[in-house]
Length: 98
Image 1: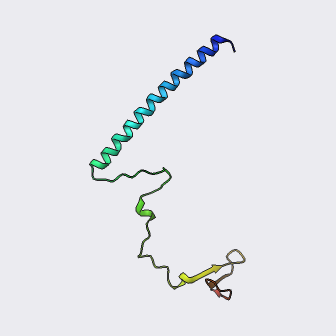
Image 2 (image 1 turned 180 degrees about the vertical axis):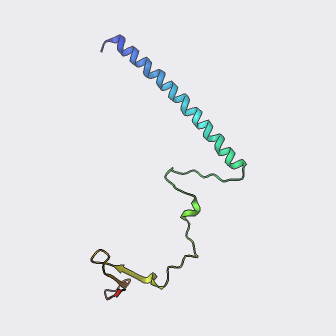
């Protein structure tokens, strides 16, 4: 690569970098405006890492869920689900579940 080609490529990269910086600024401002709209309409906004799906309430424990009296049992199936056994946590004696 000769000196002129290098200067031309460098100029193109600097120009592209400038455009990208402008886009980042515009998107940052648009994001701030959207946050303001949410807050002004009575909503709440919390920073996230972007990996959440659904609303925060989807991840809260629901005390109305009853997992029955089998809470203290461990269920095992040595044959991939054909036969199921249950045993109390910490014990080795098990019973077959029909």
